Length: 378
Ligand code: SF4
Ligand code: SF4
Image 1 (cartoon, rainbow, N blue to C red):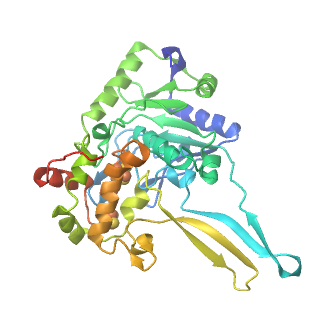
Image 2: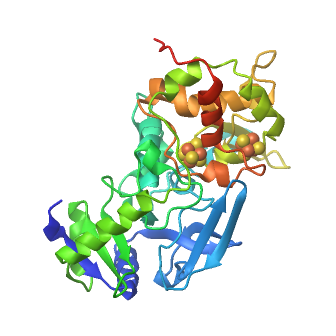
Image 3: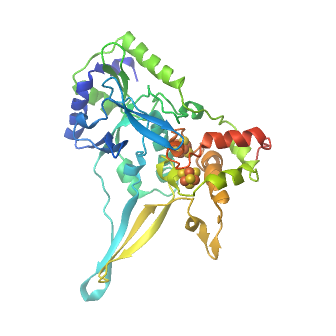
């Protein structure tokens, strides 16, 4: 997109941005503080943003801290990801009731087609959405619920200048600067006058930008934005050597490190629930007490549960070792075969929200340090 589709706005003009999106009929979702964390929820106005807050993250640790400025996007990512809106934790698939004469009548759940606008999407999250697009709508079988929510969603990216202690997007080639897949991209600039560089990535983004109270972006604004993102790239909390992981992991399926991690892993599944790309589900059927109505729901599941691999006669991954290995080798290895990329975007959530602090970058490094050298596989 040409530089002419860029402008500078004041932090106060974020309110105009939220208002302009709401006026277009979008349900505007973005970062806000709740329960001691920065989560994603509906924004009534830009006042709901986590102004002046940041997050401190380490393996198994997350806490909010006050900043000494009024930054709106001075944090990394929290426990939520946008998948909770595109691929909600629980959706009804159909309901059944008794019609005339008691015969069952089955009705497919109507699609929720309220247009969604996401404000503050990090670069790693844009990549995660792109990955879930491939999973849900990129193949022969299109998920109608995901497609309805994703279709027309308006994405406002926020470039990172404050990476978290568990982030490693630079290792995965997914950040910290948003390169594509957004309608507008914000870079908050805190040097000198507090302002945001706004760049349009689509025609509708440019149209909306033209409505905001803005001034022309100067070469100095662009240079400041580039410097902020470059500085973030140099301050990632974690790194992971990732290029050869598919083959490295395939060559080390019997590595003793799987036993080691299994002794620490609680198989709680937190890592899969917070991961912006994990997509396993189960179905649950419910009936009311009178037997008059029934429904089927799709709910998030996790490969860390024994039941997830239950097939006729028993579970095929009965141990924590086999379940952790399944998760990691799929995410970093066989995902390439299935979907043409890694399943990891380096957001660090699985590290932060693991109750015992298991760190995927550390597990990979341990296998790399002492494992079989990769030998390639067909
Ligand atoms: S790695 Fe951590 S978050 Fe994931 S299942 Fe094990 S204990 Fe839970
Ligand atoms: S595996 Fe962990 S670091 Fe990678 S995308 Fe999922 S939650 Fe983020």
